[in-house]
Length: 360
Image (cartoon, rainbow, N blue to C red; front, side, top):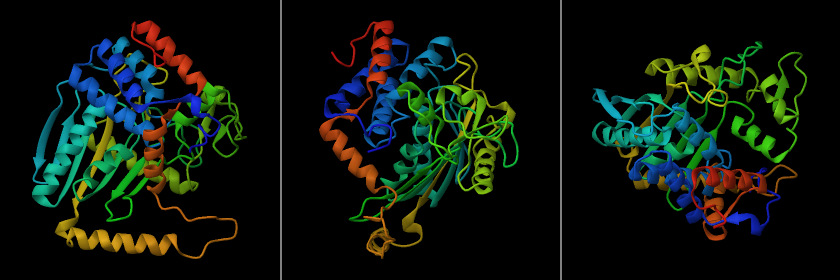
């Protein structure tokens, strides 16, 4: 269970079917076609089921606000242009990022099936939820998936700077396994995602030291409601800053999408098109080695790692992706934990849109 939901009780859990229905009803109410609303609701609910608590239904009020304000096109015509045998560029027509990137992932899988590998970029898109949603899509087809995006706001400076010109620019990688869960790495290039900061602010929690600093003097910033005064710290010091830069150039600049000073802060501006950029890579494992052989070898190595000697104080060694499966099964069975503060906010959204509340 994540730090955000560790204190939430069983009574605060909501069935995933109710969450999915609520999201779908809200999105249809603000103009998304039925099929598109259902697809976005499916992916947002999957984010909650797998533990990406700052990227599921938590984001719904913001999405609704941007759609209503004209910042997101509720009825996009998404176009895929094949630019070479193994590459494509997706024009999202300023639609919901979930729709744009699910279409990009479909294209990447199709192209990789033909050519062994695919690199698909996207522009004129929007925030698309957690990176792992898309890195796992090729995995289901016996492929390796890599995904990244330019974050929808800048909250980090280049190493040694004080201007927020870099985002949390995430990286996710999915690798198929056999009997073991797939290896799924999903990381921000900052110490924590900005969505987590927003969730802490909603719940009135203090930010742990080491996540943010005050841009004026470099001292730790612990009040999430003052996050506009701060900068998120990169993972690994200058290494995380450099990684965010590289991913931003590949997901943004390469695709003709926003990067650096051109990024629109979707937290502060609900009306301007963000032109968010993403990329997804799909690699067909069978072009290198038989898929079942690869899966068996991945299993063997994962077991070696899990059963290796542990440092004092560690009860177990976790492999990226294991807890994702555990959380999914637990939340599918027992419901998704939602804080009282978030439920109150969603009740307000339901009242605003004239739809049934989650409680109902």
